Image 1 (tube, rainbow, N blue to C red):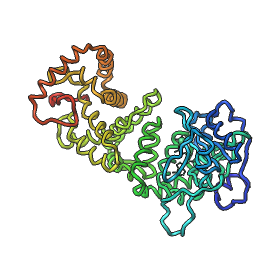
Image 2 (cartoon, rainbow, N blue to C red):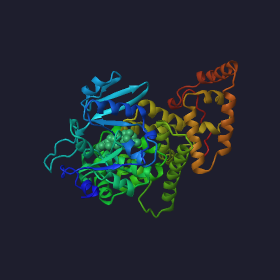
Image 3 (cartoon, helix red, strand yellow):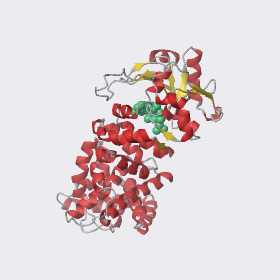
Image 4 (cartoon, helix red, strand yellow):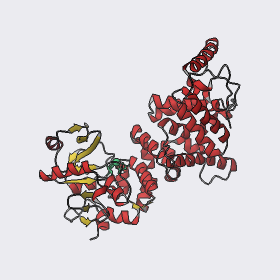
Length: 452
Ligand code: ATP
Ligand code: MG
């Protein structure tokens, strides 16, 4: 039987030998020396130990792995006993962090999936912490390409699930029945989008159908996990493709319903709706090119990019002055932050940098000191958002360039100049009553509109 067939029936053919491949593409130099130290000590002490997951996938694709994870037959306490620099962490899944200075090798014991329950029972996994064999550990993982082991001492890839064939064919496929695997953990839908867009892989047809069918189940997933995946997609450099895919499988409607609604019906005939959607996609395109240029967005910038168009539309619909987004930003972002379980800090920052956009076209006055604005904590994020808007809509580049040179000058400002700026705006502030709390520390001047 080929490994592909084995992959499709993972779990049912436990007597089969895995595919073991001597792999010339994995050069010893590409491997992490600390991970190799961990593997070799575990092996010398009689425990099976391999590199596993994302690092094996990435090495085989010629990409640089983010981190190197080790999977072993040794239980956490046995690992700990071998490494003075090891620390057991985690409550639900106990694993060992072996530290070499600040570099940590995550060393996890082989686990198996929870014991299969009655077919009609709820499949959502709630417990996932039973130890198992290497084969079981491969089978509980999400996609075939994520379940390869690399036996570094013998230079062999061990494949229990058909991951090598899928890597070769550039296909993303769940291990086992995709409907079962997506129902067990709907966040895998978002992970599928992430890997497919990041690696440029095609999603296998059955896996895609299961994603479409089970997208509504994302409503039951833990919100912080969903938020984390959304933020990852936004800084992936392929957010445009990822969000189009999320929309196509119906996941966007569940995880970000307001944005899905903003984008209108698919194949919308109304040109205005089409333009609206286009302005959103162009922001994501700008975000991606910034990531490729080495400027990944912070969570606040990511959230701001997601919500900016919604807020601008709301503000315009309520007849608020162009550029004055304070009220609409509060109306939309506060509930959004609550439902998405966004940290107070990131939610507040996203709101402030949106409101501050109008500052970029505001002239220096007694009410507004560009010097203090530049010195404000969120300024770099506000400027990043302004740049993304300029990139997306092709407007405001002259304004952006002017601010960049102002920033250079501001960093050379003397303490006296800063003091003078503070004194002037403080005087103004004392005279004001109320005002927007979202736009501190500067006072708001409603007479200036932002670049639209
Ligand atoms: P990245 O390069 O983004 O870190 P990765 O493959 O290392 O990709 P992680 O999220 O770091 O992904 O997870 C490590 C491994 O754990 C995965 O390769 C996969 O085998 C397994 N895994 C992670 N999340 C799940 C999940 N929800 N269900 C099943 N297996 C998972
Ligand atoms: Mg990883």
